[in-house]
Length: 517
Ligand code: CA
Image 1 (cartoon, rainbow, N blue to C red):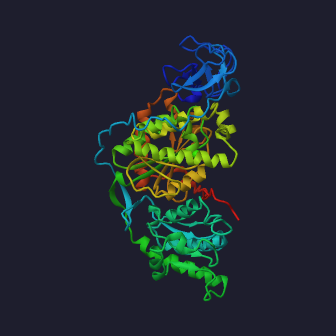
Image 2: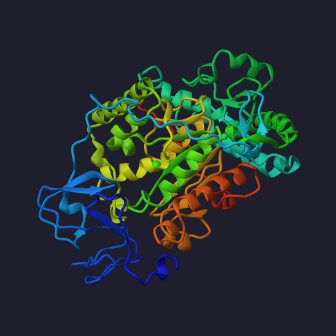
Image 3: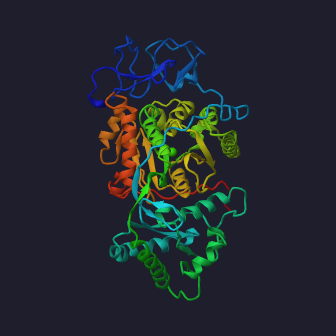
């Protein structure tokens, strides 16, 4: 009884007040298709697209998730296709006079005794992987470090079987940039905090060129630098004693091997689930995302919060239109004000670039039935579950608190993933409707499909099929529990994600709102 075997015409209505629902059947439904409710389609409607459940007058609201996602630009009869061309976009909600912590949820009962097997770091953070990371100050050294990493993987890594991987944190930043401009602190702290990610043992190795603007002291801080130099965990390619490319590579490999010895001596130990820092994201969303994959992830997020873990949701432009729901859900008015500060900063950033929120959704989102950013936002925030938002962090900042956190980031999959890694994420959950083979080298990525047809077509890329919720074959709670259990298994190294199986690891992409020179 999977999606592609459905015979009965089926739609999903999210909220009792909704005057639209989405078509579940794979491949869509023809004109004349009749539902159990008595509704008959007046025209063919593609899968995941909206059908009018009632006559909608011109200028009347189109309601999904119980909110006005748009207004009819012409009369829409019951049974017709409600697509993007028939709807106007509501104006963005103003940021003043929003409810601040007015419906903050009470804490749910704690979930005791949930554990995973992780690598405890000296700073108290816990890795779900045991990776050797090499930080770079500037793009100039990237090719050299990549060269050294290829040799380290081939010649050294096999000698240290407890180490999972070797990764170079390479990027386009570091020189030719306005390093003191407002906003420049974002890429700099992102790089610093990436190098401290729990899955790298919480301690950086650094390769610098020598003449770059982003000097090692600026990157890792005046406190950390002496330790790094003392322990010989900094290689500067322009130093006089490197008399050839071969010398530089040898220096990087020698530094790497000293760290490999340390990492290899570590063993997984039993740790409480509260040591998990789980980042949530969506990419290639469709109209199912908000009723299947995202609510299931939201259920898992609530279980994690109850177990004492840190859960981050992000993507400013995709929550912007649901802001009133989020400010009301903050734990305190101060947290709500922190949230508004980040949203307002992003509004200004978009304004400076002469774009607005209609830059989102993508063509693929629209093909997947998402008419506009309001509908996308309502689906996106379902990932955050029902817990109170306990704190807010800026892009690239390290998260230190437990509970549900809004970590402000752009919605770009790679930038959001990179910023969540900098925030100290040790596990990533990614929902998709259209499908993307996305993965990260630094933390496992569990991919959840919003539709069974995608999960079946990409059975070797998708880890969890949440489409079973739309067809009635599973509940949100079933799939949410499955995601929670899978997080603990993957974090313990007992199971491997599809992305890790194939080694699909997207690049780090920095968010640099400051000018390039
Ligand atoms: Ca995204």
